[in-house]
Length: 624
Image 1 (cartoon, rainbow, N blue to C red):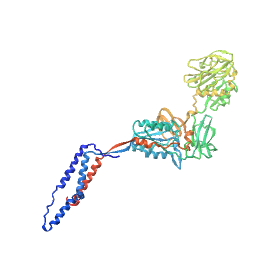
Image 2: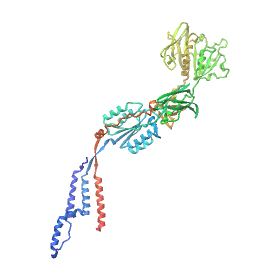
Image 3: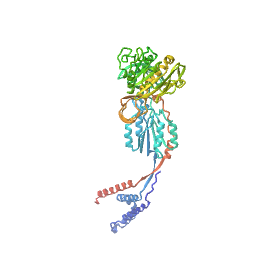
């Protein structure tokens, strides 16, 4: 409905000028007519005819009409006329939610879902625009800017490699709109893998009269991808799923430094999973699927290991072929050297070594100074210096331990030897003792030293009478531990948990890094000291790093592998279940408002054109 009210009704008094103009026009001078007697009757008839044709001549006089309309227009402008027009207030503010998750990179006939979404997003721009990127954590990239800025920002957005959280993105869009009229446009394949249910959120927003448009850009992509990667120091297990309804054959390759280390051909049944196990290469490597399919992002998975895989351990002992030596020698993450006192510089393989350059020294069943093949006097002075400079030392209890001068290195004060059976139970659950969490008393021993932990030391395990048997602590720059279980009087040395215990204790004391800390899923936020970080696609300076790309990240001297590894996000063949919006018209009707359209300028422009036309008309007629 259009009406024509006035902002200044008193201005209508100017219409009196129209009447004045008409009166002046009617009173203009006229030529005098002379009546010739012979034509008198003819002229009288003409006079009567003129009376009837006056108004006809008046309207056909072009100059009169142009002047009349110009004066009428100028008179109306004085009253400031305007028209009330209905318009859609939802176009005043637009929030665009653009899905940039991994599944949006799925292609069909060379066109990705993200490409289609970007085209639709550019069409949706209107009024003041805000843009939210829907990753696993929604990110605001633009707020309340005009269309030109919005189009520029959209052209720079690229898809990521994370999961999808549309629900939280919708709630964020709601908060951005607040009480302002506007609309929310969601462009996605609606493969939501995280966050609240989008249909529930949309219903909530509709109840608050928020207009939400869902634009589905899904396609018929086919995919088989890596959905899981279990990397350990020793081996890595890869899981590949075929999401298609037909069997697929793939080649799984392990690649390092551009060279294929190993590969295998696998036939994967429809909607089934196959796995592949291989030894973990040191450094950075990757697993590739061949051939590539419609979603290439999950056709590759990267693996990174800590800079140092093995810990060098020196076992000082006079015991031949002990269980401890066997346990340490079998560990894949330990590089073991065994030396028999008094010589510490030549190992049992007759190789020359430097004893105090090892990551760890273990003193286990040695002969005293005054015995055959006994330890050389001053050896513990050297070991003490090694510890104070940052070395790691474990001293195992033995029958004559109180007689051996070990300086102040033991982490306990020894008392009398106790000869009675006792359980050995965990006091503290940590990465060393976590294997005993379900059964805290993990072994027994027939004899042990009464002891008291020194100040600042931590007891990991103790006897029934709370005598500390496994004690750990720090000494200046190094670390020391006491192993108080007599292996010869305990069955612990024969249990499967024995080598695991020793490997865990050594890794803990050396500070060996877990390979899991070097392999992450996309979407993780890494908090670091502000520094330059090399991502798979660029270099950034940041203190909070969002790992939303697949590939290798370099932070300082360390390299981290980041992979998608999300079965739901790789399920690009699932059809969208988004329902059409039937209530759109009712919402728009409620959100429609009237807008005052000022008519002054158009009328002034028309009057100007009429006056200009009058000028040219008079000139053409020859009056100027």
